[in-house]
Image 1 (cartoon, rainbow, N blue to C red):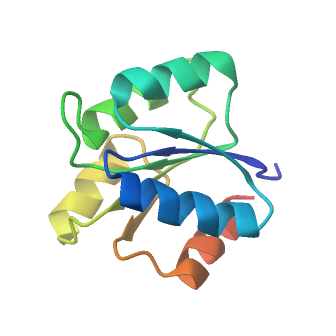
Image 2: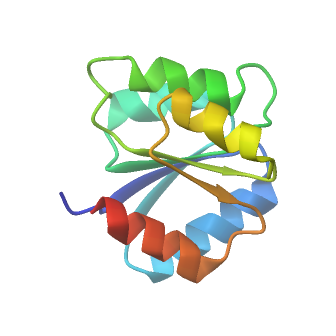
Image 3: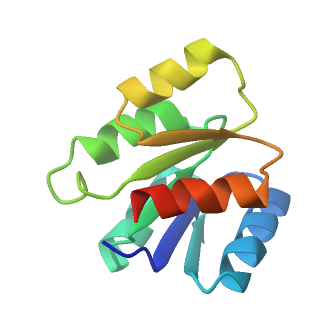
Length: 121
């Protein structure tokens, strides 16, 4: 599966701009959401090929959202990469248990992110 459309879920406008810019320069189509509600609206409009998921957000956090999305038959095949400042091994393990395919910590290294996306595609 080649990855073209990416949904970035993060409550930080700075982070959304940074990741969107980074991904668009690599040729990806990017949609953004600032919380779980917006993420589901985006999913309903157009199913992405990949979701980059922040963890710390108001309302539903990224772990809960990842679990909800990965257990929904409509979206279970969409890979999720947790993209967070939470850099403890326990956070990474928990994120993977919720259904994430990979985990990257902020500040995001563009080369590392690209390698993780390539590994999924």
